[in-house]
Length: 152
Image (tube, rainbow, N blue to C red; front, side, top):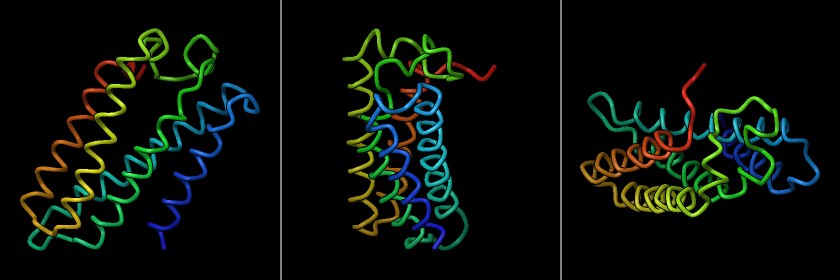
């Protein structure tokens, strides 16, 4: 049930950002943060599922779907006007809007890694799942390094 709720939350967060003209920048930022929190929770569940003696493939499969769904929804999470210039509290760097092609490349890398990870999970090869999780984490880190400001 909890996993289904998380999937719904990511979907709701995505839907809220999909109509930026109707939302204030602060609302858009809150929706984006909610989406990434859900994504983070799903990735934590993957890491937890890989720890210990027995890999929790059902938990990892649910989380992989959530991650893939978020990777598809992320393209709507950064509409024009929702960056630091809006005055809303956000860790999204202005480079997202100044260098949109570079940001899109980072988003595409994450989306591809999420799709690859879900295929690895479906194949039930634990070594491939671990490798896929590492590659997925690397795409997250790469984007954070370039487009996310440190906590203040």
